[in-house]
Image (tube, rainbow, N blue to C red; front, side):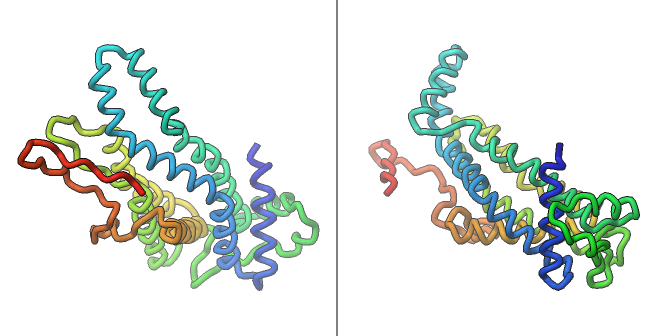
Length: 273
């Protein structure tokens, strides 16, 4: 099933290798950038949906309080709210589902292209969709004294720096893409969905760091380049604020609840421009 994705990826990666002076690292970098550009609309759709759901949280909490004893009515009112604001509650998941086979195919393509074993070489030569690439096999998988086809633990000790960089760049990208969560009011219960989303900014970097430590160095390069491109994309489009990552403050950072005036009323928020 994955051959539909895997074979074109292997072909494209090997073709880039051939036109970039047989430099496998440069081929992985360019290939990763191209994949990020192609999947960028899906990524932006996911971010817009996540942000929209975050903005609806106050209204959803009001509905939960109002219809806490009527689950059916609560569900109807929630769907009405989603429809009224043009929000798809599954909008943040669908792009991830679509991108998942692409990520798996890309990971497998790197493994096949680097071909760490004789069997891998045999499998590689049979996956080219463009004739004339067979003569490039085997690809040069050496870089800075490291074998890109094996894990950092099977390389010189300095290769262990790559999983660390993966963790750092994944953390930065995660913090940039997760919408800021305003602190709950005293009478409100903690937002479990928001808490789970925030916890992912810790879990995801560690998980990707584990993958980078366990699998080939070539995959670590993909993670690092992909994260850096993602950070640049979010910064250039204004959908992420790197200042929030380092707690330097920003205009869209969550603010504390507004203090009540002497009359006992909370000042109304200005309408969004």
